[in-house]
Every structure is written in structure tokens, then in C-alpha cells.
Image (cartoon, rainbow, N blue to C red; front, side, top):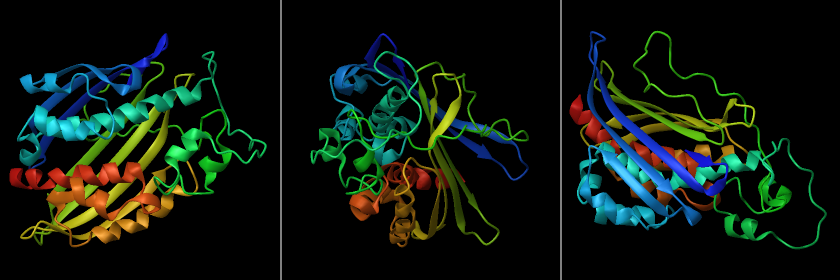
Length: 308
């Protein structure tokens, strides 16, 4: 995701997805791929959208706001893609979250385009609460009442949390592990997901997944903003979760990691229903919105199991 420095309301979102099958002998082949390109304008409204392979129904999404209501419009635009767990649906479902997080990059710049660094000092207490804080209060573990962003918000912006340099994720011995990715341009962010599904010698389905949002700083360094890893096992006969663990790696506020332990509530839940059940079981200060997104993306695991 990247924005136009001359018009911060305009954002381009380029989405890529791929299913890759690695056989027992180590040989890999691509089973399918998809691409979605989106341009949003003021208030995250979709102004242009294309896909490869193309889909005529995508025109329905032009004029829709890339917010919470966007996902309700996906079924009308591309009926059947959700139930089939296609790569096109996988990408479209992530557009509203990408449009939201993409604007974070501007928190690293001031109004004049100069780098903004460090965590601001707490503002003088006036008894008033910023409108942004009111809208975000208790939406997740990090934005709980009295939490770091609620206390330290200044000028309508939350404080900048820790953003360490993001190491390369492609292992030297597995060049196919990730897509080929261009360098991040200025004023840009990148969201990366990996969902690996395998069966162990006992026939147990094992999931190893990770998620990262990273941001290109004003001096061109790729830094991690949010990052989780997840491990889970699934009963193949019932397609339900038998074990799940989430490990926070990078999060902006000290309150954020408290949500990770709550993923155990999903034990026994059908994984194919994660697009809705995660939101029902993990919400408010019990959730992390980025962790929820990462968990919801596991709903297509049964599609991958069919490939095995």
C-alpha cells in the first residue's frame, strides 16, 4: 500500500496471493495465483479496481468505502467466491484492513512532510478526550480505557510504538517461500501473510502461519509495525481446532499482547467458520484487531487440505 505525497487521500493497494504445493521430495509447484489492484480516494472510497484473472463483478465495488461495510459487498460483487475459498476472495477480504492500516505511514511524517520520530510526552490534562480516542476506545486490547494510546494521543495521532527494522523473511534455502517483491517506495506499507498446512506422520493437520505489517520510514528503512506467528493443529475428520497458539512479535503498545492468550477460546471451533466465529469469540478489549485478521485468514485452510 502506498500513498501519493501530493495527495494523501489517494492510496494504491496491490494484492497478490499464491497457493504453492511442496511434495514429499521437496519439489514445488504453483497451484493457483491471483492479483487485485485497488485505488482508493477520500475516506477510503474505492475509485478503481482490477483483478487477474479478471472478474466483471468487481465493478460493483467501485464507490464502496474500504471500511467495515466493504466485506458485506464482496458477496454481491463476486457471489460464490467466499464459499469456494478462492484466492480472489482471500485478497478482497483484506482490502478494508489494508486501506485502514495503509494510512499509518503518514504518522511518521508531520503536516509539512518532515519525519516524525519518538513518542510524544503526555499532553497537559484538560479533561477532554480527543474524538479519535473516543471512536477507538475499547475497540481492542491496545486501545483499552486508560491505555497507552488513550493517554498519549496528541494532535489526533496516537504515539508511535516500537518499530524495529524488519528482517528479510525469505530463507536462503527456499527461494519460493515468498513472492518476488519490489522494494517499498516512499510513503508505503506492506502486509505479508503466510499460511503453511501440512500433515505430520500421525496424520494430524499442522498449521504454521505468520503475519506482518511493515512500514517504509522516511529514510527508506522497512520497519515492522505488527507481527504475529501462529501454530495450530486441526482434526482432519471434523476440521475443528484441537490446539492453537499465537505469539506476538511486534505490537505498538504494551497492552496489545494481552489478547494473544485468548485464542484458546477457538479450540473446538470449525476452522472453515473463522471468518465469522473469530469476531464473535474475540472482541473488545479481549481482542487485537490485527491478530483477528490473521486468525480469520485461516478459514481457507480446508481448501488447502483438499490440495493435499
